[in-house]
Amino acid sequence: MAVTVGASRLDLGALRRLPVQSRPLIRPGTVPAGVVHLGLGAFHRAHQAVYTEQALASAGGDWGIVGVAPRNADLVRTLTAQDNLFSVSTLSADDQQTRVIGALADVRLAAADPGAIVALLADPAIRVVTLTVTEKAYQLDPAAGTLRPDPELVADLTSDRPPATVPGLLVRGLLARAAADAGPIALVSCDNLPANGRRLRGLVTQALVYAGAGQAALDWVQDQVGFPGTMVDRIVPASTAQTLAEARRALGVEDLAAVAAEPYTQWVIEDDFPGGRPAWDRAGAVLCADAGPWERLKLRGLNGVHSAAAYLGALAGCETIADALVLPHLAAVLRRLIAEDVAASFTPPDGVDVVEYGEQVLARFGNPAIRHRTLQVAMDGSQKLPQRILHTIADLRASGRSARWAALVVAAWIRFAQGTADDGRALPLDDPLAERIRTALAAAPQTPAGAVDAVLALDEVVPPEVAADAQVRADVTAWLTDLHRHGVPATLAGAG
Ligand code: CS2
Image (cartoon, rainbow, N blue to C red; front, side, top):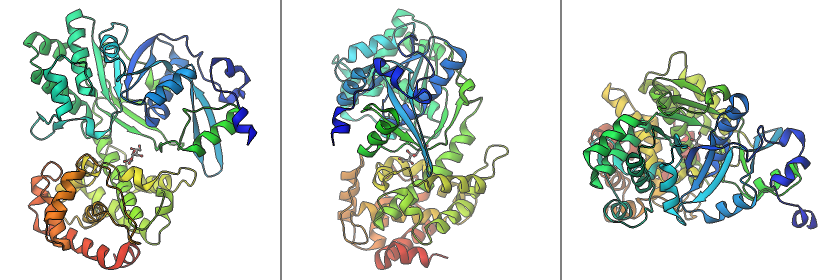
């Protein structure tokens, strides 16, 4: 239709033609950069960028964001053509609010010019680096605190080639910053990992050691670099043609970097910023001394339940999480997972009732305007399941309790990894350990017990005490047997 082809493009010149409520809160392009963000995906655009814009609008400061995409050249081209502008549509069943965000001061493609990113990290104007690089970028064994570098990272740390990985960029950038004595900085992980600040500190420190950094550089990092932990929360599915169409309808111009998100948003941040920070508290973020209890609540009470809905939903043929939530008995089973397993596995933050939190989570998952694909949430299970489900199991079992509902999620993941939905359709295993998982499953006896043994033996995924627990093994095997024999709907119906 001519309407879409003819629509002009979002850029600085288009701003005054936008509906008033859709315009940025600040004058884009006028705020000097103080933040570098690594990982320019939809989540960053709908979360940290929105908080930062509000902080700038209410408290000022030179905290514009330089957004760095590690590899997505199309996105960088799009944002550059749009003067670094993009919109966020906030969607609920009966409402859409679309606003252009003006927080990006610049965008860069790391793959095209890694040296420029290293120079930015060493620039005294930059005092905060935020990261959304997904679980698999943190190549560290959290229990042993040792690096688990893939060949790319090894090449980054042991050769002079321009860095191609995120830890490689950070190491090179920090070494340059230390050499220039360019002042303190905070590196802020915004990925869904437990103790993400500590984990990033461990990754950076181990990578520096691996790269042969001297004691002076290590001491500089120890003294001058903060690694605050955070809990981030907002459901932001990957954008689709429909997302772009919704944005165009609201804005009257084409926005090829548009994202859509749910209304709910939360950010809990440990206040460890030796070089200062944007006034994120003025935008609703909670600054605190220890984000740990909030992280656990969110990883187990939201993400774990999300993974459960994703694997069970995908096996039952559901396209989105909201579709899965209306499968008969699924919500009831998720409620039992929350009330009987998640809530019993840890002490929540003061004043939080885990069951109430879970109800809110289920209502959010049911938002019909958020078309979050089950296959998107199902991705990278080997990187997600430990903190989302396996730690819940470990803690329950350590206090002698049952972990039966959490065991169902492990069984659903195994069945998903086996690659076939209830109706016989193939399911993609998009996971950095896909090859290992497939090989382990192929080599095992072709029975539910064989598959469970093979998967529980993946020692970089499954904590040793969980792998060694006969009750857990029996529970997962019983669920997997049911899923194979009867499929998801009957398994859920008979779950009581
Ligand atoms: C999801 C998360 O894709 C996933 O694995 O569980 O991205 C989830 O939507 C966010 O953590 C919500 O804050």
